[in-house]
Length: 231
View: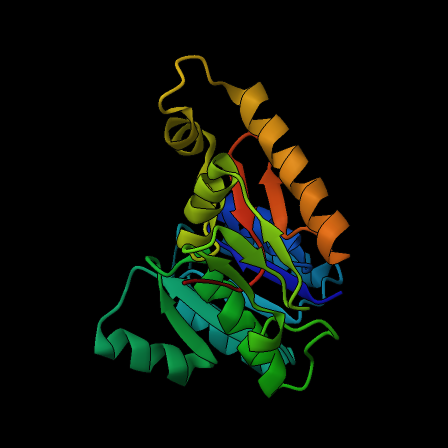
């Protein structure tokens, strides 16, 4: 599988990226410092894509990008809080293929990786284009799969899917999902949420013959790992 190496000193963001990209079918690993990046490469790590923060505690991301570009044949995506035009230009001049700012969603980052892999001719067999799009029909409470099979949703299932699909691939926190689904019920907890998701996954897979793209991010919440449109 495609290996994505995340170089990011923010622990939560690094973990979210590793977890999400793993759910999307990539082999994802993360390091927190320039030293750890150098060590990983020295130990034989051969990433297909490096997601690189500029402001690392022990190194400059622009300089690291230049070094990676000189020694490695891999894609480089800069993910940083520095969004000025001069910073972007410096990023591209340092060797970055794509420059993203940190308010980009997880789905945008995944799309950038896939775009870069297509450009480099290294995209795995599974794609995430419009041909693989799921559609949530708000008028008829239907979830329509890429193979055009549809699933009739209950009110609770539709509310869950509306939140999930509306996040554009970002992780939905358990607390937010429970708050949405609890109304008007008073007692609604983690076990209720997990039971709803388990039934919905089984329902999707039985009626579409496709894997349900609803994935758990343990200890955090759920995410929809496929492309989705809400109509």
